View 1: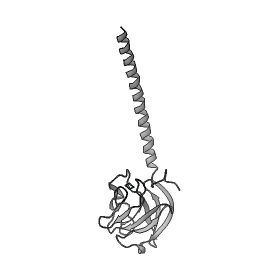
View 2 (view 1 turned 180 degrees about the vertical axis):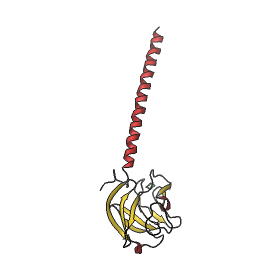
View 3 (view 1 turned 120 degrees about the vertical axis):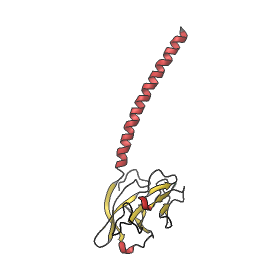
View 4 (view 1 turned 45 degrees about the horizontal axis):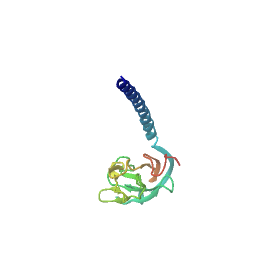
Length: 172
Ligand code: FES
């Protein structure tokens, strides 16, 4: 008899645990929805800023810039072929943050395969594919700066498509 009561108590405990688990799963669903909304907010517009002129660029040679402020280093690149996010007459001018999204090491450009590479833990980002991570420890693609070119050939940045390293949100 005593043994049966223990079994019943065990069943009740199990059911309570199951209900708690279901409630936890529902909460997790809400969390992921909120996270998805938060991710949508990663793409923001910053005040436009002139980075350089087309005449300043040499094909496949990075030009150092900062955007949206002096604490955010990046590179401006003329890749020679049209690429995602590319602007200018050839659709080949892009700009990226050079702070690794993993732990903020400074990235260096490899002209051979047109990637930005991290000396910290070896993450690699494809400049011809919108900064897509192709290797390493980072958990997001490289922030790409949104650009436009005016009639004088000046290149302006307007926004960023991923969260910049070290920032809780893409705000100034
Ligand atoms: Fe770049 Fe870790 S800091 S991969």
